[in-house]
Length: 399
Ligand code: PLP
Image (tube, rainbow, N blue to C red):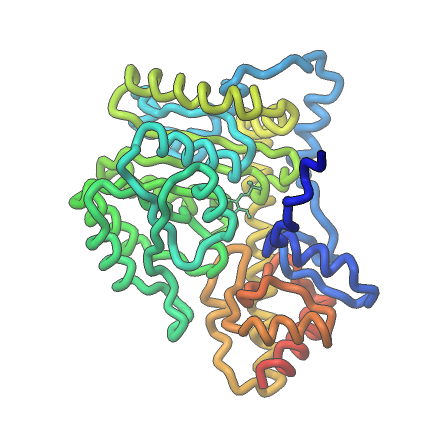
């Protein structure tokens, strides 16, 4: 018997597929602007100094045992404080149920499964557009999905009216997936006033906010400011859910280190909720990986190391901001007829250029410049050496 002859080739992942095409290109000047991973001005991956120091401190550790199902306790408690705030009343009251997760993807997956089991009548409202994997995650968890308006192509900014209307029109008690900061792929975030209005309306509608925070620190360069939306919702009395990832802000991509939390009504409720989170995790992967969690907890526990890390996040965010300025400047110098202001208005790791799929195809075929077909540039891949070539190519395809 042939067991697998009916298995068809799966579609390529829209983001990781870009890297595959990039790797196959022989042009030495090729540029990969697909995946959202930080690079320095030489186009090289970066290991943060604070992470290096944490590595020195954990080196030779005798501890190689399994972590508990919920992960490293110190790591989880420091993560929760990083997101909700050192003096957060819900943290102090023990209302936050939390487990270590397999980075941001794993946190979202745990929540999607939790939603299916314990919030069975809710569907999930996902921004249009969003990180493509969100759709896969909630699909595999068997939760129905709806889109809510987020991005307005005409203004290359937030469709705030559409978003508010969609929040209002969703059935009471819906789950809304919100990007806490540095929205992927658009680089467009609500203002604090807009977050406040969204929070009020979502309270009126008894909606549940699930924040995906994959870029804390990358939006403004300041980890506290980047957590503002979550804290606005908590102050208003929301019981939110949260996915945290240390992939980007600590450069721990491959270590798969993150945290999944749910704010409950009481410590007693949080204990029950946390026990169910573990029951979901146990058959999926048994327990999370150790090394990255040790590194993060070393950094967050030590005031000096934490300060050093804050600065390093600030440096990464600032370099990206500089590249936005340079790219826009170069396009204007070339006499581009388009208004590229959105390049500098948008924040975080990505720029949603407005280029069409055909233009993206030409950039790849004629210029060896690779990005996702929605016209999203990972600004982290832009540097002082390739920005002129990128601007020329973008000008050539958008003339
Ligand atoms: N959520 C968003 C919005 C992202 O952009 C990403 C990564 O690109 C993730 C979650 C998950 O990343 P990871 O699983 O590597 O933490």
